[in-house]
Image (cartoon, rainbow, N blue to C red; front, side, top):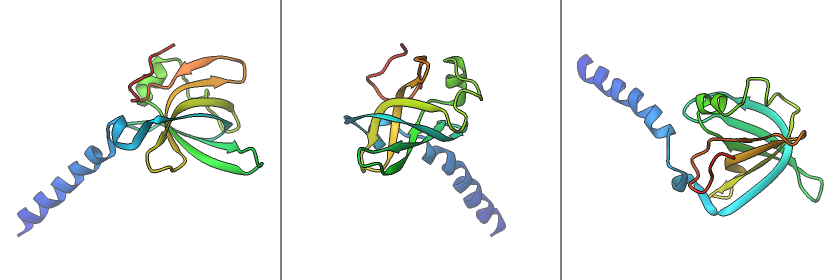
Length: 131
């Protein structure tokens, strides 16, 4: 019985990372491009996708929080990001594609900083290439 319980537990633990990784089309809509200007509130350097959290002020003045998916931390570092690139309070413009379910989540393609510097986010969307 312990062997079976151990095998079930091991199979479940192995399934968690597999569930976290997905294709672009599974979660994001290529027909819903977004351009978000906002302030970084948090940067998560995690695998398999890094996440940028930004607060975006709408036309009505209301703040909405967005999560933007990027590539892996390794991809971002190779594209020119550093751990200091996206500190809390950094103002950015992010281009990407919104989640299919309409939530404030996006798959990022490019990010532009206040000084005009532009970096490729290394996301999984099919239409973007590094610039």
